[in-house]
Amino acid sequence: MISRRGLIGAGAGLLVAGCDRMNAAPEVRGTLEELGGLHKRAQRLLGRHALAREYGVGAMSPVFRANGNTEAGDPVWRQHLAEGFSRWALQVGGLVHRPLALPLSALQAMPQRTQITRHDCVEGWSAIGQWQGPRLGPILAAAGLLPAARYAVFHCADDFGGDPYYESIDLIEAFHPQTILAWRMNGAPLRPEHGAPLRLRVERQLGYKQAKYVMRIELRETLAGLYGGKGGYWEDAAGYQWYAGI
Ligand SMILES: Nc1nc2c(c(=O)[nH]1)N[C@H]1C(S)=C(S)[C@@H](COP(=O)(O)O)O[C@H]1N2
Ligand SMILES: [Mo]
Image (cartoon, rainbow, N blue to C red; front, side, top):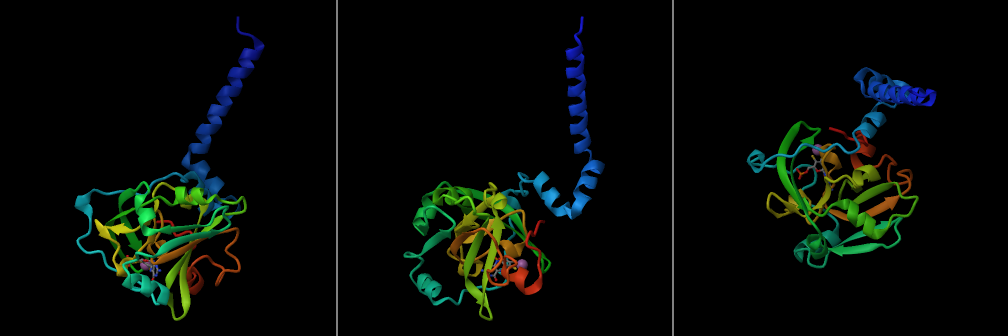
């Protein structure tokens, strides 16, 4: 004999299963995303772990053009370039327990990730290239994030007319497995025009987020009060989207 409680339990289970299926249905998801203008946000949360497509070596572009600045004006960077970046170190600071200074050799000695991905520039060109470097997430974890930290800001050595290039991502993107600090491209150390000695690769987003000439990473609670306040050079200068999803 089936007990009353058993029936109720089974009914509740069916209801829950039904709800899950409904939430997964595209029409329902679409409605949820539209509510409160949360489309972008919801889409992103659903795809929080989604990976950018990776390619085989055969798909690599024979030519990967350089775009934006192809060198940095900062005299400190120029000195490091002349020294082969042997005394250069990446600074990690802001809202962290332990600020870090990581020489290139330290970044090269960490576990490495290699990925072949497609870079899409808003100016209308794409190229498939291979990138290698340590994941950003474990580096931030080593620095120890303070509870208020919400954004990682990348301070670069170059500028446009005196306005420094910078970019920022949130912690979901920072800890994504394909988010790396690349010091190697297409099997050779990063060339100056591609952002030597170190650049960000944040593979689910457009070209302008891929900050070159990264000198310092700053953990912040807010992007307000930093340069134009929109989280990146192009976001400030031309109103480009901060979340530049492909
Ligand atoms: N520091 C810095 N990072 C930058 C830029 C730049 O001018 N300075 N240009 C951005 C743009 S618009 C693109 S498309 C890519 C170009 O990278 P590439 O030169 O390796 O092709 O870098 C991005 N990161
Ligand atoms: Mo770009």
